Image (cartoon, rainbow, N blue to C red; front, side, top):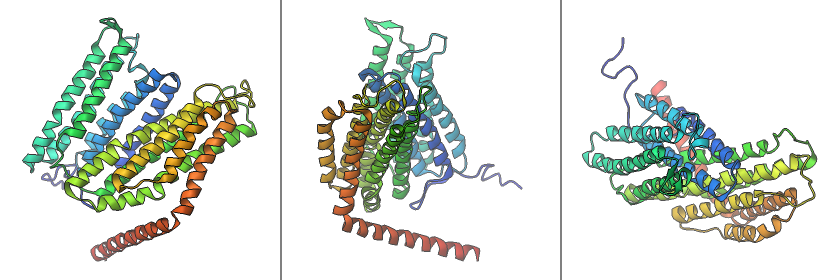
Length: 433
């Protein structure tokens, strides 16, 4: 017999300190696998400063959508009650934005108004999250008022997006692409400035572990995009299967693995401890600055790296491009720039959350910057190999230099995990035996 007081789907409940990522959240991230792929694919077709800037604007808006989802997912158990009924429309709207990225700035002559559809989808994503969060705070009038304050930048940003979708082909001497670019820039400034300067004093972070875990998972999604691009660099109609191509793909995977190591080896577990050791308003600010704002450059860097990998491996797998001649196109700048930006973003993250700086990474950034003029005149395989060599050197040097710190950190993390496992086992034993 149905319990009508609880509803057919059950109650929408608050998350707790021990909340972990659930299957619905991981399912939601699958949309962002396509989002990152779509941004990289569209940008690769227009590898110009304007094309790269457009890709960055789209990424910034969709990243803000993902982070707004994260705020709600950390506060509520979205896998229960009406949560999935909100998440699924958000997924559809986000996926629609990813589908229409190619026409986001130029529109479509077929009669489908992509910029306007994008504005509608963005409003759906942001409004659903805001309304759900406002509803969940029904017992906290102060928090409700703060949430309503965030409705003002949402209304302002979406109004500008709608204006961008409705502008004519030429406006006061500016073509529609230029004008839309200016308007989109205004939207990004509105959203990110509001997130930084509006009060968060009554916002809650239910689970520090859940927050950190979700951002680590999205970094994995970004790393996955670089692996996909390595494969796409070989998937060409004029592909020639040669040893240089296979060596290049191995180097590309190695570079991605090095960045995984740079993120997850020492700093990630230390960040876990730092988040758990911080509480109340300082924790909220730390979560906002270190994760929402400083993870965006790292995601952007991984997309740049994926573009560079694809360009360089393309030349190793094409029979029309000699292997012993200097590489052509912007592949070196994108690949080296992507690694540099990732390391800079990660150093900023480390400085904000831990108050420390790894001089090995500072040295790697300086060295990579100095090597770019040399790399652009080298063959593609040599340029890729030089980049991989620097990345491997960072990993090896940190393994040696920070050996004691790594051991202590891992022992601490292992003990913490064991305590959690023992508590969970005891609870299950008491409940079910």
